[in-house]
Length: 443
Ligand code: HSE
Image: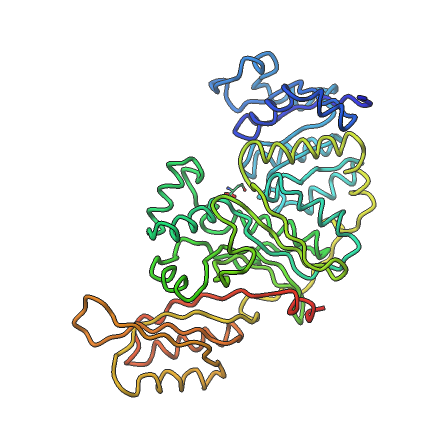
């Protein structure tokens, strides 16, 4: 049933490059039988000849970048180099020559997407980007195509598998962040340098790409408030669990009164929230549209084969002309979008979890309550616990507030710090409970 033959080059032979070549060498014919497009890998560009190359790849592997990039017989290039600078320069060169490009490079798209889409448009070509957000979970297609009848109100979820794995292990094994990170490195889940993941930047790249499409928005990446998981204390995880909450690193973009807010941060989710059940390296994203209501996408958001699944889907889509049409007809791409007000996280409303130590004596709670009253913040739950193994007359105080502005909470914390009866009032974690009803009210 094959109707089209595409010759492709894979640029980069890391985990995703290897998985893509492997799948295509084994299954190109059965994929062609289903899709109508036969994909032939004609070149694999290596960073260094020292790499361990599969026997079936040796004849097509090369370090000659110029020869691969200028080969007129190659129809589509799959950029799997990673990092920003080299990939960006190669993709620009390819788009300038009107070549089709497929990429999984979220950092490059989040930082340079607007320019790259404009360059593709100018040269009558396009870039397949499904693999950039949560690998094989088809989020880009859902937003750009399947949900097109909706006005989207919110996109949020767990988009970083490494962070989710670390948080799951901290919770299940009652271990510190440091210990859970070590396990994730030993198991090959976290990179040797995990900073992009644990500091929230990888999640920020993904939410930048998704929100740009979902809201037809020119995203200002530097205006996304980003906080990672590297400061999460096991103590808070334990108390939150007792109170019926789970820690998750959430990337969110949703409508608020004066625009769109986009942020990445660790939050608490009530334990029966659908995302609270997402464990280990799995990703899950909720999308709320006005026509369709809530849809939830769940799956493996990282790794060689899941990413290769999205990459191959994009190559096929280019082969049958779908990506080109989507790019040509849809007005959602960064280069066509306009800036809208990106509302800072400080102006958003949440409930909050606070933890502090206080003198265990009369009148202390009244002093603390006066500070909350002063900033119109209302208590929902107050939990006082004995401080173990200490001679001091201190107690641990955990407060859950009703919904309030983050800026109010910051004022409350700084006023509490000035009370002589309060110690280390620094821990403030938002409780994220944007549900269908609240989202409907944001229209
Ligand atoms: N390192 C990412 C994760 C996958 O752990 O989800 C690539 O974005």
